[in-house]
Length: 333
Image 1: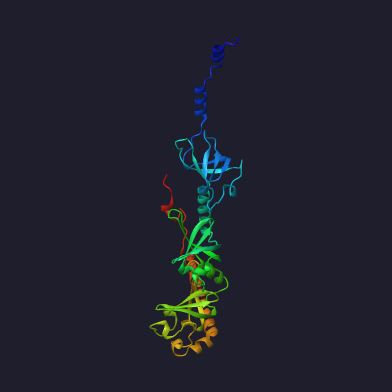
Image 2: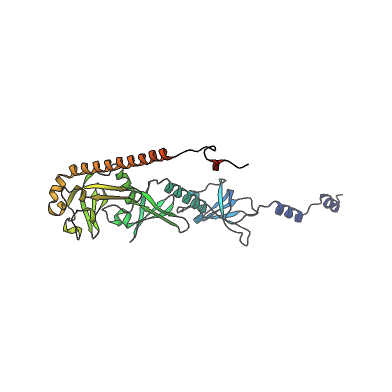
């Protein structure tokens, strides 16, 4: 006959002892932690994940990806092991809520910061437009292109679905601001084939009180009012008309700001020719541009010579003293 009392005493281990042991080796999970886990069960609107807690954690479908997910099996597979972000603390049932989206979100911002540092050009389809500009997705993050940085003749609403090259203007995770420029990407690409002092043919696309916007091969350059002529001009439309085809010279290329500065003033054979006789300006444009380039070259050579002379003078006047010649250099014992 078995003595159950004796057996219980011999074992010396109760359910309370077992729970205490579990508590002793239980991991402490905090919101914000990233932990490994295994997909335990896939459900219609979420998934249960084993992360080593007493109760399987829950991953809602809206937290499965930075992109929209219709069904959990688009993202997860049973028994798959991966990292999860702890989104909330335990609820009344002792269950944690997890997120994959938060991890992807953090890594996406890290990636776009890196791309901005590299001054990389990225491409993205426009998925929507609004009054202010166009919306795109970069690394899964929602980005905005201001209307002033969209360089196309198409109406904004016709841009939906179009793939655009883009440069970064602002990357601010704290304010959730990702701002991009289509114009700057086009200007940079165009700039690779342009040089300061080069004459190009362009068409006047817009007139403002401060100058004219000239289309040169698909990108816009500014012909400032002060660079139209040596003569004073009240407004650009006294000299130019929209759709005029003119010759202009490139006087500055600013890739950082995506700007091309133009001039017809530097092409005038005589001061005021753009006002009095623009045809002679366009006829002699290449000749005047060559003269301008030579002036730039001479100025650069003179600057280099002056810098070299300053270094040489500094070398000649510098004297080296030894301790014997200058007792002040001796170290007192």
